[in-house]
Length: 297
Image (cartoon, rainbow, N blue to C red):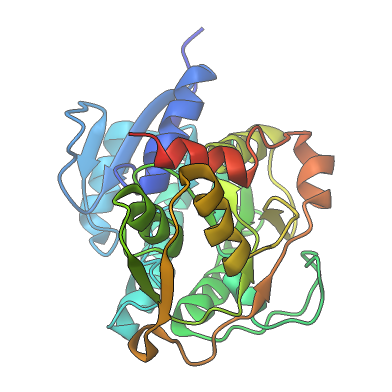
């Protein structure tokens, strides 16, 4: 029997690499697309922009995927150009779903990556999928708009919407919070400049997030959305203290107003009850494990 063929958008990105490894190890034939050239030397990769509908059609007609994990997005909240969030996250996703629908592809599952940022500054904790959305920035608004748009394809495509909370791991860009902190500890820097300090986040290991994406894909389409999270919130102060304990290095934390965000979400902690019920997939790593892994030379 031929291996099931899965397409990963954003294949060369931080998350895409781990999802590709997870799916290959589970027996999937993995293909990828992205807007840039792949640096992995992988023949099962096609360069195409989600905004290029004819090009996207041609590539998917070539790959003919049985399933899709859609990760490609403008995901950095502080990205400077607001229109990019909507162009890529909403219009690009609409183009992808249109091509899948018209071509009859993705019959074994289409997992769309949304974001827990759509919950905003909710007072509920841990946050269930039924919590009212309250997006606080263009990134979150674009992801919520994508979720609503995807419902136009209900009955046409077997869509599951995933809402990942914060996650990290080796290979994540230094502009993100945890890699920035880890990098400073690895270099034994005397001080680090950060923005808002009174925040807490639900951090997962990217390898556990990849496992969750595979589990959701293999569980089949689900109505509504599904959180991907650890179910535990860690404050920024506690995260820094973990790095101190692991490395034995002390560091001065300086607040830089230039790094502070307006409408910063203070607390994000998700409920993973629905993910557990649907997949049974359990995290393999806690945050301390992840930090140890990232701090290794």
